[in-house]
Length: 226
Image (cartoon, rainbow, N blue to C red; front, side, top):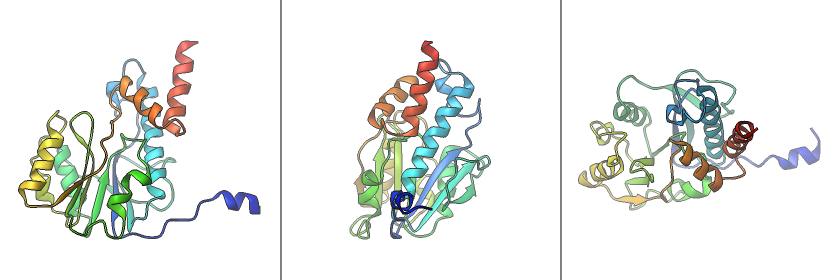
């Protein structure tokens, strides 16, 4: 390896007090991003899902985490970078799967999904700093569609998620209310937009034009316009 190439590799971030979990689904055509079809084919939707997952995991590699875990529905593939543990998702609804992910992660834990490839270490920095849990029990990242894209718990308790109605316009409000009703001190992260529809994909790609997701969307759009 040349000195010039070595200089391009950023140093690994120092470990932090918080574990970072990414709940994800193997990007298999017909099983991911089905709301992108149409206008995209199932294969194209899977390409966009994989690009979003790659961008998300790349961002997590730059974060000062105690552990980095992919909580996965499916099998790992070439999209998985080094430094991540793999844990299978349990059966059940999304609330049960999220609850189980937290139950298996003792200590301060931050969970994000694979649908916000515009996420950066800077966006999550407040929840990952050494003092992130001083006078704070939970971090909450609302999504533009009424859900949430990030949830951090100082003391992961699966009861804080079980029974919360998922995939509704009120999911985020219900989850945040669950936290505050339990007496937790909650701090908020900036809102982000999930990639669910083609319009979402265009918005997110514009917000993160240098990512793999934006490049994949641009390539698929160029092919469609020929």
